[in-house]
Image 1 (cartoon, rainbow, N blue to C red):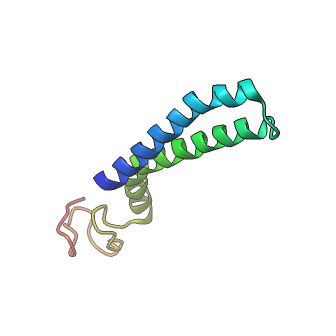
Image 2: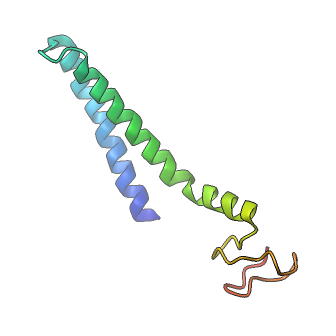
Length: 95
């Protein structure tokens, strides 16, 4: 988790730097590609932001999906046949 977070954070910083430093240069020169350069920069920033939020909220999304499917929150073991107050037979996590 920490490694994924650091990689995405670095990508986010890189995309932000790209937007803040390169976008004014592109806008001032308006080369042969015109607005395509700006759209590419904005698209890069949006994708980096989406990846950042995915890594941040991935554990919560996983827990929500497992809870909704009746699985153990820790290991994903199918607990539909066990008692509600019993511990998971695979990992021992209590629900």
